[in-house]
Length: 129
Image 1: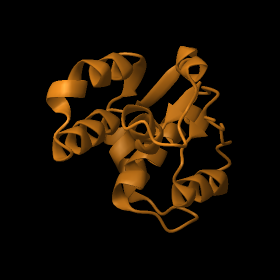
Image 2 (image 1 turned 90 degrees about the vertical axis):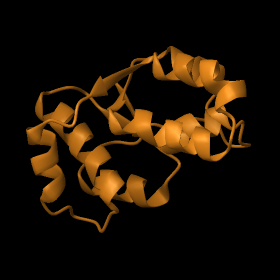
Image 3 (image 1 turned 180 degrees about the vertical axis):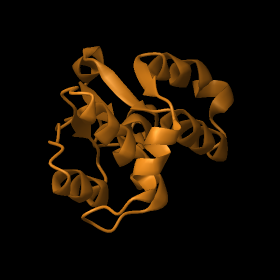
């Protein structure tokens, strides 16, 4: 199971030079519900919702979401082995929650801080390129 960080989804939507291949999106994707809000905020901020909204929703429809339940939020409040930002803590708490349910999770991200924090939690990386 591939845990998606918003950097990977936004790279696809914004057609950045470094982005996942088309085949990448055929895998089993999961993320925090937070991803949906992060992506839409960036899409609206760039003023591309009218032209790209259908494509954005198509990508988000491929993702299974972990809700921000009290269990996930409680984990996000706890310390992490590496210094991370608030939204990263919520993502990593969601990935850690899945792992505690014995789900095989690998994280796909272009964010170096997020990747380092995931590795410190022994969550393996998945190269989206």
